[in-house]
Image 1 (cartoon, one colour):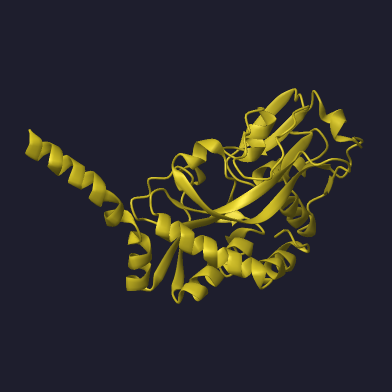
Image 2 (image 1 turned 90 degrees about the vertical axis):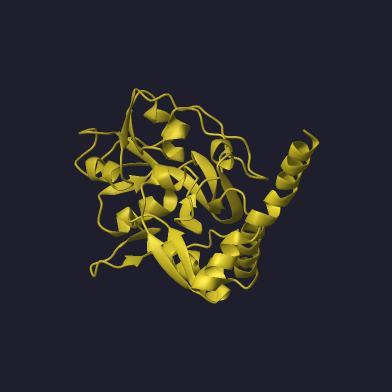
Length: 271
């Protein structure tokens, strides 16, 4: 009985040593940083005409890898899989503009906030709506399994220091969900109210759609909410999370993140 108890206690005491720094050791050994990201979310990350992954998140991931002395290797799992944790070593880090929410904190470690996104209301260019408050009772499009969907369903809780609580006032008549970030805009571009009356999305994504010729516009006035975005790791490796966090802090301090957000979004969203 005592031997069993001593053995169990020893196992508990040794457990942190087994996992602490395991990811860093693997990355240092293989010289590869396995990155989970998105494949269809411009300008964050998307396939260009040469079928190569490009975008803000891709540049950030490559810069992290460079500073670690390794090469980034990308994979594009489904969003729910990437944010669901329990990766089993498939990826070392996720650079996918992920919001730190309370449910995600149970399965993921947030290494660092690396930029912020204001969420806006986009309507068709022909829409007569001039104020977000006029969207009450309207048909709203959002990407599924995102903070946009949580916001429109009044269930969004952002788990980050210094971020004000989300204020809810929108009462949509109908919510349409889409599996991809650009699909809501594909419906919105068909005409005012044809399939949706408005889309809620990150300002950077909307500006990217406008730049690419989508006949849409951002409603003036207050943002829906401001969203911090985090670099995340699978839960349980504190040394690795700290290493990524320190790397992001250095990228903020020397202006690299500000330069990358300005390159892709036209504004410095890193502060």
